[in-house]
Length: 224
Image 1: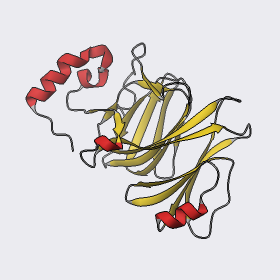
Image 2 (image 1 turned 120 degrees about the horizontal axis):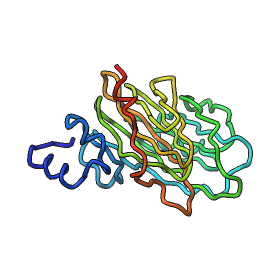
Image 3 (image 1 turned 90 degrees about the vertical axis):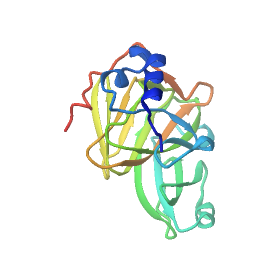
Image 4 (image 1 turned 90 degrees about the horizontal axis):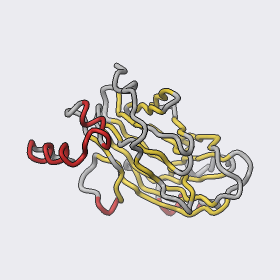
């Protein structure tokens, strides 16, 4: 868990500047979140990169992200198909599969299927998976990805603002953000937001780029 002291906060404000950290400058009560490797994990809260799997060139047919839960890692690995990744997150064992729609396995529990995800034909992609645990009011850095980003919410609520407007994600309502579109994510609602994120990015490009030429209108933060 991040512990904020007055001295640390002043240091962050001086380093950020309003353009780089607009959310923090507008409301010092909000925490600015960025995703870090799981090896740097220091607590439950935060955004953690838990797996990264090169997938190569994907089928030209509609691409979906399928999320299944299994009782053990061994049973999940047995059920794994092409472009599947076994991940432990949110206290469960998951089998993530990117590609065509697949039939549920009798040994697992189908949670959801998110898509279609728009990709470029002939491009090689990498699936980066993130576990995100954020308190209400936490705000992401303004950024974009070199491929689509999909959000599954297990608990709580999140809101993504892009130049096109907002999308709200909660249990049973998933979010997809397209490639190259600047965005800001805010944990909204009144409960801790727990979820998993897929960044399906170009293998030849950075998965995430911080954006400084677009600033959100605060549409998510104005939601009750």
